[in-house]
Length: 467
Image (cartoon, rainbow, N blue to C red; front, side, top):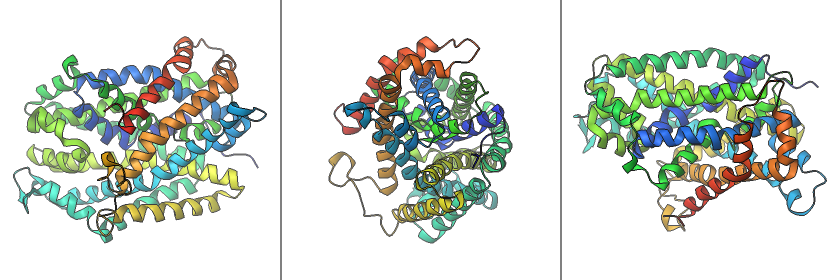
């Protein structure tokens, strides 16, 4: 049976960009940028995107197009006939396949939070979230967020709603579902970001925020700036999750891989930049640099409602902001679910419908446990036996295992597969088209020298050895 695929190069670019552009860009990138020095983090991130990130992004797409298989099948086929160490590299396919299965459930939980906030800001006066409003000793926005995630019934309902939306898109297939979905949502997402950026430019004291975001301050640079930027790349570019390998299988042979990946890289980095432009100046204008640096993961759920409550037109732009975040979350959730469906369908040799049913069972099981981690199961700390991580809740534990441990390991396996199993020169020939590949030297340099040492630094930091 002929495999479903993208109908055009534009379809691939928008779908891959939709996967890359998600909560990692709109939520994670701004708070990490604020935490690690603003402009210096932004500069570090851009350099890594153009080198480290680009090398892995184009490698994964090429592996998918070369084999037409899921990560497990791709690694298995490419390692076939190899003995000892090189043969064992096929384990990397399993690592790259397990990651999206871990991420999707908790990602849908956060997607449920975003869905709730779209409704909340649409029906509640934005003044309810004002920084001066206090509820039970907390800011009103913090109290609202804590009350919501601590309510198992309410948070489960929104989690289920988000999962159903995601599953319906995936059930429609690659061209009629994922491609069409991204062709509609991605342009809307970009227009919303640009509109809110323009709004933020005219906020009182916005100039100080733009200076903090755009001007690198070398005094704020540390090795953690690099580690955090590398960790962010995994989420921003959807690498080491099996997603780009899966989407690579849907590419048409006649499409220029180098050009397509360049467009995805440019689109994703541009959205990250605009997301920072949209959020950080507004937060600095609202409460100064300390407010931005200390906001952390609560940036969009606690700080941003306060920001919108403090400025003119906040009610309208608050709703638009969370609709934007919802679009971003949905496009990435679709790609995560599609990767899992594709892998299960190929490996178990079952239909897409049966594979979707399997994925939904796993998502609901782990997702509900994650939701309950803020109420009934709030005392469960899965990594209690490791002092550094003993206070992590269930969601943070899943995020840590996938992002800080398995993703770097999966990326190391991918690098070894390309360099040692396939051969860098042979692999480069597959990537090339009739057009010049101006970054071929940078690609080969990164894959042979840069990528694995960088990934080992990420892993060592996760273990606490570098702290």
